[in-house]
Amino acid sequence: MTYRHLHAMAFLLALGSGSALPYTDARAEMLASADAVEVDSGEAGTGLSLRTNVMVDDDVVRLGDLFMESLSVGDTPIAQAPAPGQTIAFDARFLRQLAYAYHLDWQPDSKFEKVLVGRMSQRVGAAQVLASLGEAIHARSGNDARMDLVLDGGDVEFVLPTDIAATVGVQNLQYDPTTQRFAAMLVIPAEGPTVQQRRVSGSIYETIDIPVFARAMGAGMTVQEADLQWISVRTDRLIGNVITDSRQLVGMTTKRPLRTGQMLRASDLVMTPAIRKNSLVTLALKTGTMNLTVTGKALEDAAIGQSIRVVNVNSKKELTGIVQDPSTIVIPVAGQLTLN
Image (tube, rainbow, N blue to C red; front, side, top):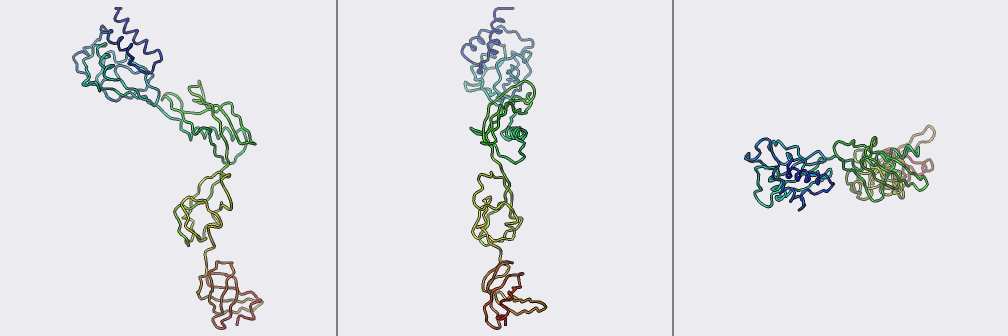
């Protein structure tokens, strides 16, 4: 083995030393002096075409990754690959020295020419992390209530090589039901040797689903089932008389304009009038076997079951009754003397 072969091998060993960038001055000198590396198939004179963007799925970048054509020495490692999901750049100087060291027929067109090398990756997102933590906390606490986990410092995710199982293990879980605080060690993957790990802590909040409007509602609109959607909210954020049952909304009328997704309170709505002011209605008195009815006029709006003031159109007497349906007002027995 020649001195120059040994020099080229020293360059490759330097690449394996753990440095992230492949083109320091020292390595450039190694490349410049490694001019006796032999190639088996006339790469010199073939007019190689450089790739401008490369994705690798390995710990190292190989010589063959950089060119479109096949090389006899294409499997030769020439740099450490970037971290999964990251990118590094090989500039014109490094590429020129690399071509010289391996007797490749290639020269940069300008000093700005470069190759961007990215590393393939997969992600374990925040939702998957929180789901794994939630399952572990449910198992520890025995509490089946729905919960919202909030991590101290914000959401956590992991970026992994493609050959690692994208699973999350939860170890050393500590849970305090009094303060609703937890701490744990997250490990990737869940089974087998740990590739990545991170200590996390946070708070637990119970949640429930509540009905809200799926669209903006103006004042005086009657609520239908189709107007509603459900959202999950933390119970500690439910203040006042927030409505949690859609049956308290359907058929009601909005008192004021209300936004999409806004938490709703009983004070935001009123019963939808079954009878409108000035409409003609039937005034009914039922006592024993007697049923007496006359025509009346509503003096105000009222919903079914509500009290309403009416007037007998014949006697002009004002009465108070209860709305039975959209056309009938039941007059209490005490009002029979004034019905006629």
